[in-house]
Length: 484
Image (cartoon, rainbow, N blue to C red):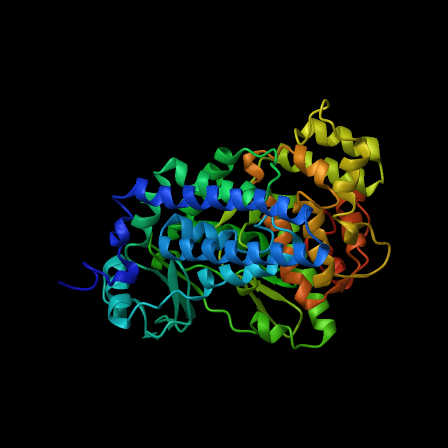
């Protein structure tokens, strides 16, 4: 038998009973959730009955132990839980974790992104040729069987087409789709997983539609399994940004895309780690480019590329950025975008009552909730301090840490507003996207007039930054964009 028919254990959907043992896979997670929640209650009592130094030691011990258990369980799951762990492995994910311990969880969960073993060349060739229905030599003039990168669902190879174009070819691991689909049929699995994050790490409970969030997360994970859908997403983004002065989307080669193979233009440039060593002026430009890409696409086209990870950007010496990986894309309705815009717009105008009304109308809070308009205003306004700044503002890791605490911690400065914040499941990944972008930009320490960008969006102001002026010209001198 070939490896394609019976892949190695690392890629075997039947390993560990993934397909046939849905109950066995839910039970350990339920146990971990209950155990962690119980320990959180005990922690709360112990910290009240001891001095500050000992209380800090108790908290550190609890979170280190919980992070290790959490990462170990997800790392052994191999299915949707592992992918969900990756999607939620940024600091923004651990909503109930005190800010001082988020790095513990980020470090424990980083292995879920970094430890994927590559397929051996023979297996990669078999998958590629089975998907394309021809020999690799027929489709490509050259093919490097040593991968450029390996991740949870697939790995990427450099190749050259017969017409001379350099391309990147993403090949999905055999068995991974079956493992994830089997998990997604278990409706309680992701709900239990999210309950661990949303409640198990804290003794305080939040207003949160766990099953709705699980359905939304499951939908996004399932979409990532079909590379044809990713190719269509990427082609749409490429259309919107073709010819853009500082944002580049690689073109896809649709004839060489299948459910498990995606072929696209190969982009060369600086990695994120290399970008961090560049001079500050370039880092400022890259930070602004990423910000304008993410929020400009949302504002104009109701789209979010929902996996804002530093590895999904390639940086260029002219200040431009190439954006990769469109497997996880979230589409919003225009009315949803307008509802969120109304909240930010009222904040931008420093209107407390207007912010409260916009939040109630959007369904984020009920008019009867025991939370004041001032608390709700601070929940949004203080979180986005960069947007209200009247001069260039540097985004730093310390600023982002405080932002995460205000937005996400049930014991932080916005605790009461957060407790009653009613998030529609459609917005499950939005908080992660927002903070994930900040987490990506913060190491660049980008100093930009972010307030002028907000004025462009919410007051139709003329752009002040050089990049804003170039983008304004690209879009024909209007905020609506050339391509709608």
